[in-house]
Length: 198
Image 1 (cartoon, rainbow, N blue to C red):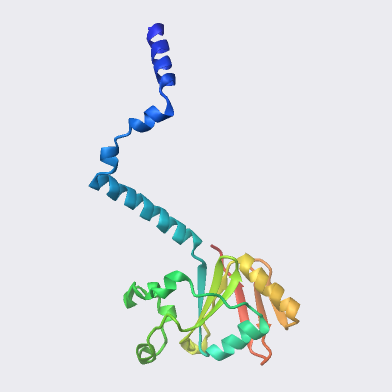
Image 2: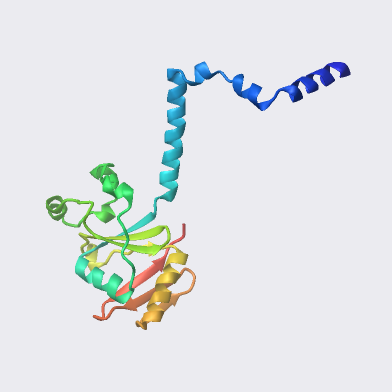
């Protein structure tokens, strides 16, 4: 029994790398099925690379894009961002209107239907390396004149607060945890910024 183990060990160690490569079933590897499997593996790798490199996009709906531009570019001095590749293909609208969150739809259905969606609409800003802000028009007052809110994660919101402090804007810190503060822009409009837990 011990002798058989020694013989097998010596046989395995004597096989060289070139012999191993020659022992691969190249006819199966380069068959139609083998090529299809290789293509699927390559496609899966490409999709994984694409999806992991795609930026995280936060979308905010506002009633006036020009006022939003003044705030994000003039007050916060956010740098403009390139439109992510998956937005070129109108990805968010391919889910259909039934899959869209009512928060993103206008309070007036006729306004939304007549205006439509266009992937080139809106403003794009870089918040950090792999995080972008997409500002689109179409918001309206909610029920009883309540404005809709947008929430950010803590790290992103701390960077926004730091920009506000550097720019010398008036702000009021409401709570530290979760981070929530009010800021006034140069036209004396109050904007609330709030943290959300992931």
